[in-house]
Length: 270
Image 1 (cartoon, helix red, strand yellow):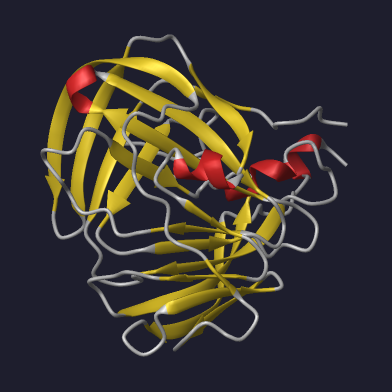
Image 2 (cartoon, rainbow, N blue to C red; image 1 turned 180 degrees about the horizontal axis):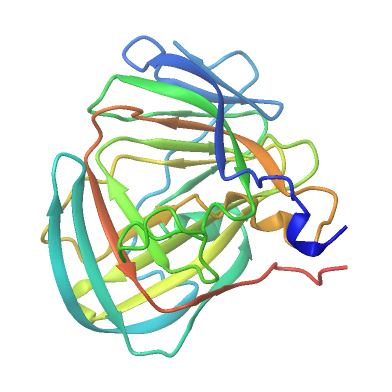
């Protein structure tokens, strides 16, 4: 068979498997029930009720880069606002880190381990829990550079915050979940970047993060690199995860940079 006639299987980008409505006014507690996400009116008996991680601007983890300039701010109604940042770097490496309680808190995120429960705060009561399948190429796309739906050879920095909460649950039976995060200090012109590797069975709770112009730091995240743990695995090119989010009508604040990014695992890739 000639190479030109070969047809390869279309890779998974992002696929939605199921959606369940969640009313946080009635069920404000997220319980990690042995690795499965549950939303309940009160913490179940035996659950460990934890407090959401506070934001301490003095905590700085991840690889640091100088933000050389704000290249532009663009309104994209009705979806949100894009801010293009300039980095003083040829390329950008995200520090690979296992998501422990302290590491997650350094980016304003709460690690919810099996058996834990946490109260979800949200100005938007009606959200959705969606099971997604993420493929290894989900991050190889840029909504900012006029490339449409082209599958790109590089991944740019693409981080966000918004005024509704997220829960990213690591439910894949084989591989951990990866969430890219950042902490940006606008007045100091610096940003810290990392990939949080979430152990199977754990979850990340990201509280609502509306714009706060006087805040010392801005905590950011993106989950399109969810399947980063699949790289190097020739038998698994996608993974499943559960996400709590506002599926319709959310308003986002995006921060991006066009430099090529580098993502590596936090352990030797054998």
